[in-house]
Structure formats: structure tokens, C-alpha cells
Image 1 (cartoon, one colour):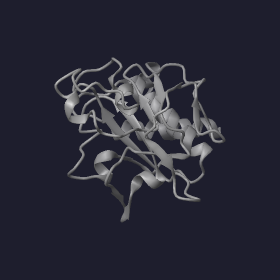
Image 2 (cartoon, helix red, strand yellow):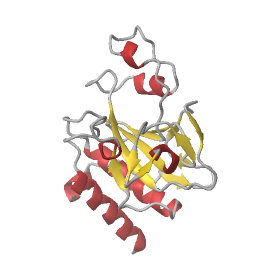
Image 3 (cartoon, rainbow, N blue to C red):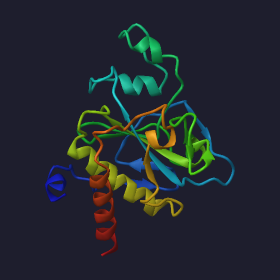
Image 4 (cartoon, rainbow, N blue to C red):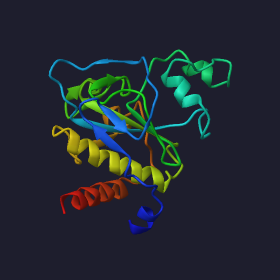
Length: 203
């Protein structure tokens, strides 16, 4: 874990502002693919996703374009299959650890689709969706684990309805339909980093 921590960028500027639902220090790019949560519903679940556009390629403007409905169908053969989707996430963490926020945390992002968690359907209603730039079988970058763990701890502090134990993958809420963040995602590392961060805050 200490080796991973040594490769994490400075996180001091990343802070959750519960009043605005913003991750301060993240690049802000508004997605139209969101709406209000059900009345009185606070976020209770964190869903981790994996995404790359085109599949297996990293960098470039295409994830931003997808989440803002600006993906050109003729920009790549794969784009024609997804350009009409109306999807988003609250946050994207790129390979270098940089963060982009598309939807305020108190609003409902359209990230989980048909989904269920512990017998409860419509996970978008009560979850926060965080995308990691990657693929199911490609190891995620140390910077991504560090930023994700920091953001999870920040969200748990900002929203008492959240818990570090309520962090799942897209595959957990849509089994058989989705496989991300995939076999390459190191859940024990994430959980150890989150608990380490919470312990440091409490000390």
C-alpha cells in the first residue's frame, strides 16, 4: 500500500462541497444526462465503473463527448453503437489521476441503468457513479486508486448516508449485463486505501 501511496498525486485540493455537490479541484463539465433524485433521497451507494473510448484506448476527448451528447457517430466504427446513448456519471478519474465531474453529487446521474442492490432496484436513485478510465483486464493506475480512495473518504465525510462498506462495482448491481470495473480491479487495495485515509482523518 505504501508503494501505491508514493505514486499518488497531491490530493490536498480535492474536497467535496456538500452544499453544491461539487468536487472542488476537479474539472467541471456539465452533462445534460441527469435529473433530480426522488424527494428526500440521499446518496447511499457508490458504484465504480470502468470506461474507455474507443474500447481499449485511453486519453482523448471521447468520454467527455459521450457524457455531453457530442460523440460523433463517424469518429470511430465503435462510436456509431453508442453515440445515441444518454448516459453520464458523477465523476471520471483518468489514468493520470485527474478528475472530471459531470453531475453534482446530490443529483441523479444516469450511470447504472437497469440495476439492483440488495433487493432494491433503480440504483441511480440512491447512488453516486464514479468512472475509472480503463478496461476490465487492464490494471488500473496507482494514481486512480489513490484519487478514488480519497474521493470515497471525502464523500463519506460529506454525506453521512454513505459508508466505505457500500462501494460496489457496476457488475455487482447489474450482474450478467455489465462486467466493469472488471477482473483487473484491485478491491482489497481500494478498501485498504479508503480505511487508511479515514484513519488518518480521525487521528
